[in-house]
Image 1 (tube, rainbow, N blue to C red):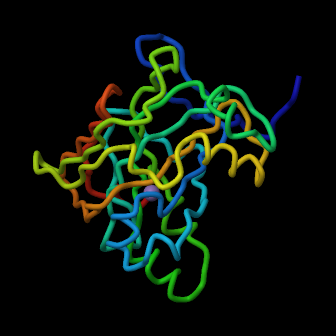
Image 2 (spheres, rainbow, N blue to C red):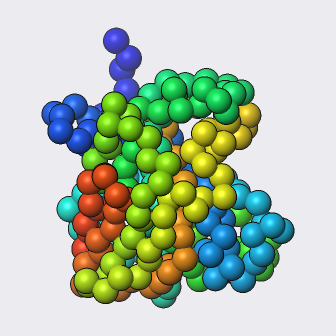
Image 3 (cartoon, rainbow, N blue to C red):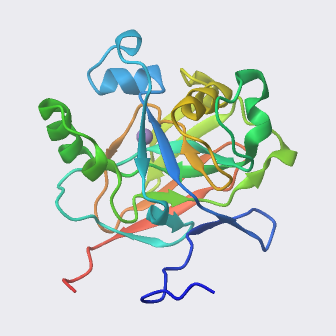
Length: 234
Ligand code: MN
């Protein structure tokens, strides 16, 4: 038995809908610039800006219903509602026609973003890690297993304090889930437990402490989180 220098942290996990089982999170991959209307609101042209991949730490997940502390070092933290594909079977160089066989299920997720840090990183040609991969930056609802289908279309939406901010359809993604898995698996060996945030439609905007966020994808569990003030220094 391995003797650790101190107790290892608990493995991050996500609820599985209508089950007592948990989905153990291995890595979190994200796709940027995957809806044309969001690419335009970010000041770019969809054809000139192909989707990009970035990552978040696995322990950035936040459970549905849990409070999200407002992150430090930002004055412009944005919501981004996204369809999340959860990988159940790994692989490299996965062929697109069979890519969906690697999916365990789907969930609604929020790719929280320190937009001011992202703008600064883009201007300086620096990586997005600090803008995207901060603590508690990946709220996610329960994962619906693929036995209930693959959502190739369906409403995707997010409201803040009951006011609709984002609304589109997952059929509007520039790269669909199968294409994303095929591309991503040429860069990394996908493993069971990987989560893939597939990009957000237009309407992203700032959140502040006290805001109630609700968002979802048709047929999947609605994601609800409240933003709370940053914890005191510790
Ligand atoms: Mn995103």
